[in-house]
Length: 162
Image: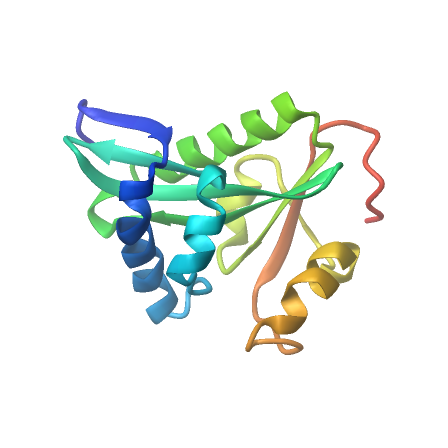
């Protein structure tokens, strides 16, 4: 990992690079693709890692409700993996969720062990009805989703049932 990397909020100029990075992993079946329009609409959700001007990783904290947010589109270029960049991005998302007062954060993932290192635990997808009926039903994988739900409680007043 370069000592020149920075974690920062994404800007309009980052959108095509975010889409390219996410599309690369979507093509491998490791995450869902995100159309350009969706990335523009949710640009404020994204944080990125930039190394000498080049975008090398991204993640988004998407607010679902007053007590619920999702970490999504967490992608790290192959040559930057296994160096802690993904963990840093996830921690930035969790810190933002805490600062907003969000009780519960979840992710849908092919790699639950990554999130378990941060204190997430596996959960039944049906514990996330706002996600399932708000977004998942439009996914081409629905109802045969192969992703695993992971959840972390940031404060004890969460309304989610385990």
